[in-house]
Length: 354
Image 1 (cartoon, rainbow, N blue to C red):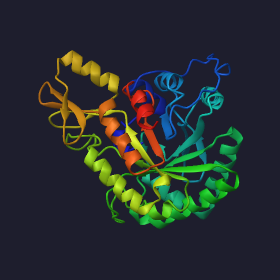
Image 2: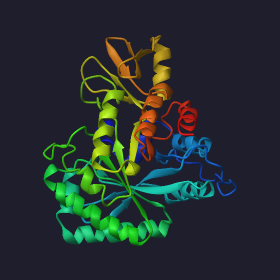
Image 3: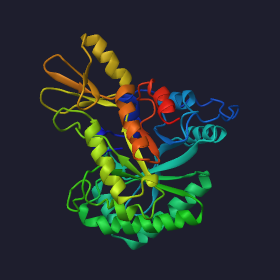
């Protein structure tokens, strides 16, 4: 989701296989025979989904805890065209399975091209009325034709100078989709205050965007990011400050808290490497590292080698974040992403939200 956790790539699929492992969903997997299950809690739990085996396995194993999935789906270009980022057969199988389990489906629509969220593309789109109209029409027809519940709009690196233009586009898009009964969710950067000139988050006016979308998904992660100094990906005090700001701008019932399932491995100097929970545990075991708990940040971490630091999330750190969802009466959570998580989070989700 966030620009800082995505490693430059030639294609999205190369990123999936080389960084986080896994391949395409088995083409002959029979999902039609599955039956719906009773959900184990009453909160919205969205799982961001990449079309690989790790996301698929997590979906299959935890479908009774999930209420929605957002498969990485279409890139939105400067002309308002949608560019598919998936194997149609694989996506169709996932949507079919989700339907049998009464799991909502949201197309993740983004501006990521050639490995990064492209500010020039989104600027050109927002500045062109014809392109915006084309985008609205294409998104509407695509979502309806695929039979999706809704969309998750993930436009990042939007220049702060396009703040009003972004709000206007979201208003136009939401109006058109709501006419079709389509749910509109939008991923937005985490912030603890509003600075309209901020290079990364300034374009996102929580209060105005919240008037048009059904849910704002606050990406409450990358407090410390790959290219910056080492530290927690999402410390509890920072996340709570993000939530406090959000609920002062948007009704709590419209807020979904984004939660990271990953961690970072920082060298003494240089750029960190992204790690899934399993990769982190394997690394700690291989290095004989002692996993510690940071009592202030409420996250695990360890050090190894030449002053390398690893900060990550597990069932215990995520428990604290889930309690914020209950405390502030938020709509639910969004996990970035399925297949990266500590398997123990699912029992924590079910018990905390019960």
